[in-house]
Amino acid sequence: MEIPLFPLHTVLCPGIVLPLHVFEDRYRAMTRRCLDSGEPFGVVLIRDGREIGTKGVATLAGVGAFAEIREAGRYPDGRYDLLAAATGRFAIESVDSQKEPYLLAEVTRLDDEVGDEPRAERLAAAAIRAFVRYLDLMRARDGESTEALDIRVEIDASPDVVESTIDDDVAPGEPEIERSGSTERPTRNDLVIPDDPTVLSYLLSGIVQVELPRRQALLEAETTVERLEGLIALLERELTLLSRRLRFFTPDPRIMGGARRS
Image (cartoon, rainbow, N blue to C red; front, side, top):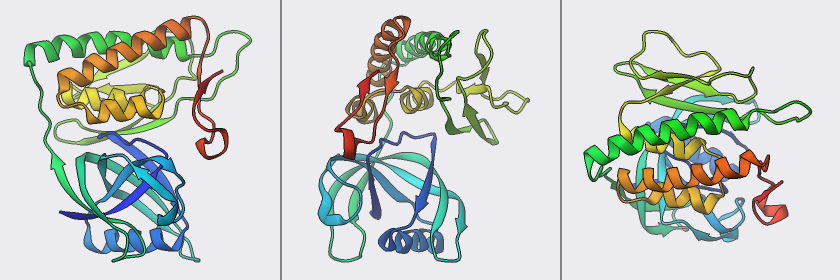
């Protein structure tokens, strides 16, 4: 299938909702196309290069995420504010930079293989435990200041779609965790945890603050088991660093040349 591409310095995982401000003419045209047709666009990581202009995009990742527009606000001058939800993965087969002002790609939808299902269940439980500790360590302590971890997610909570926000700048105490299917709508400080190990693996991969190549590797994992194993290893690394109060800092990669610890 052919879809428009929106290359960015970010990795979008299924279940994560991405806010976008669309101002460049080529992406305004892409947005109009998607709104008129109802088709998704593709978000893919720029491995090397810059976001604006197809000539500036030197290298793209081979795997990206389908993004479906959930909300769109248009300014009088033609700019858009969008909320786009990632709904699945694709592999890029070829890219056309001539047909439209934006990139078009021939892509293949990637299926989600679980692997060893009992092992996936055990790994999912371990990932949740590690993530709870991670959220607790992400909170500011006395004398510290920190930006809130503000991530929007979309989860199929059977049958309703639940959109939630995770915020780590909350009062001390155990993070509030709900399983999907709960009758209560989550508050700002709640995270709905899906029962499906695959959905969980994508959700946590999109939330944990790690370097882009590491998040891309999680997105590209061939099975849920492989993704959860990688995720748990990253969480354990983050727990060690956070216990020493080494928090993740993400400067603008176009200016600073990548992420680092601060």
